[in-house]
Image (cartoon, rainbow, N blue to C red; front, side, top):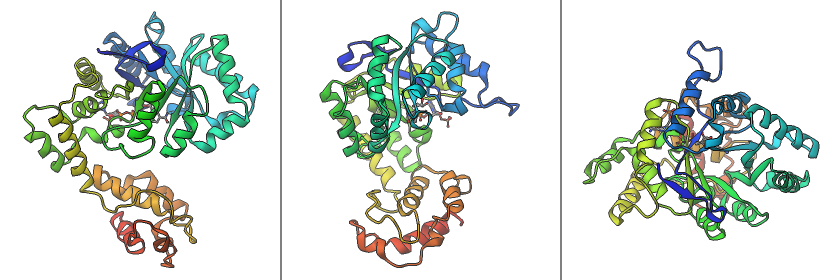
Length: 377
Ligand SMILES: NC(=O)c1ccc[n+]([C@@H]2O[C@H](COP(=O)([O-])OP(=O)(O)OC[C@H]3O[C@@H](n4cnc5c(N)ncnc54)[C@H](OP(=O)(O)O)[C@@H]3O)[C@@H](O)[C@H]2O)c1
């Protein structure tokens, strides 16, 4: 295992951090996590050199912290750092924040949390956290030793990231980042800004939740033609670890084979490892994925709100994702929710307000109907 420095914190952590959000349920179907299996996966990762474990209050119907707490008994707690999170929905004042943190410490069977994150904030959520005194709470808990580092995780757009990261004395930030998300969410600009500020970056969704593990034929052809052979997973992690701003890359593994494969990969990769040819390969891989894009919607939302309630960027995002990474529209939760909430393309009356507002000049009305038909709706 390679260990990396956490920016201005100066501490070292494993390049591979285990995400505790994706454990499978028991085969019997009566529990959300197969507890014994999850505990043995966590311990296998730690025995292999992992020192960074990521969970959250809400993961796996609030059972992830409990299982992690059990896995860290028998001396394992002292070998690792734990990251967990405070969700906006669970707190509304100082007392509820204190209560939540006490609950999390109890579930994790520990007296302190190393990295405590405001969970999945954007500008609006950050303003809410400020309005209930969360920054002061984090300062106080750090002084009391109940948390070691004040952090946030983020899925919003770059301008909101820039605002939030400059608005408080953060110790660490967790962002979604991978070779496909260079211009999405915080993106490369956000990564570089954090690096400039000395704030260590922890990466989530490095494989886009597993979607980058299985290359479509046009991408696989590029990997196959490259003189050095690596799996798509290894290429994705290698591309990430090349960046010096990144402290740890999280991945949520369900199987021993995935843990072992990732331990092997993270044993060999470090910042600056990618050659010019390898970087060019990954640019070509990104272009090959993007060549399967259905529509050039950038999610700017100038078309919104639709007078008839259609979730235009949502529909185009699902359409592109299904084409890029595969998947079955019949089992797609986002499509199901659009149907339930009456904001699918079937609500479009063709008024054209969206097309007049679209800076990309996209044929929105016609594309909505094509997408909806391809979803089988
Ligand atoms: N704070 C937030 O808002 C937030 C949001 C998302 C995630 N997170 C955290 O970040 C962690 C990492 O994100 P993620 O789980 O989405 O990471 P990821 O690495 O993008 O995806 C994990 C998935 O990739 C696949 N995978 C992993 N290693 C593999 C290997 N060696 N070979 C083949 N497939 C492999 C598995 O998919 P299959 O199960 O399909 O095999 C696994 O479930 C999460 O677990 C969670 O702790 C936080």
